Length: 101
Image 1 (spheres, helix red, strand yellow):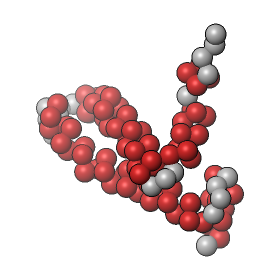
Image 2 (tube, rainbow, N blue to C red; image 1 turned 120 degrees about the horizontal axis):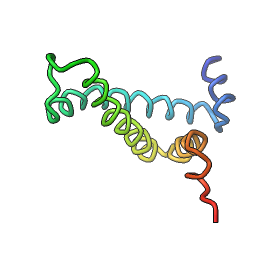
Image 3 (cartoon, rainbow, N blue to C red; image 1 turned 180 degrees about the vertical axis):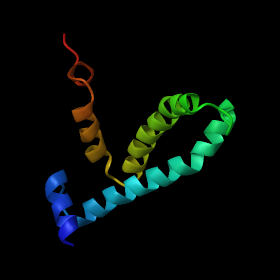
């Protein structure tokens, strides 16, 4: 319970219930990415013989963006979209968040 209170304070969310929902979003997203990775790699032709560099490039190009999209999607489904959107705004360059006139 102490750990959840720390997360609540760190993430600046309203309650333990919201912390739990955010943790569920992270776990669902991670699990989904683990499940879809083999299908994506098979689709693009990545095999055990494929070089490590090529596997990493496909991972960066497809899996990481998929994780981000799934995170927002699950966040939306569980009512935590605002939390994750706020996190993305901190990561994106300022010109993408608020374009100059």
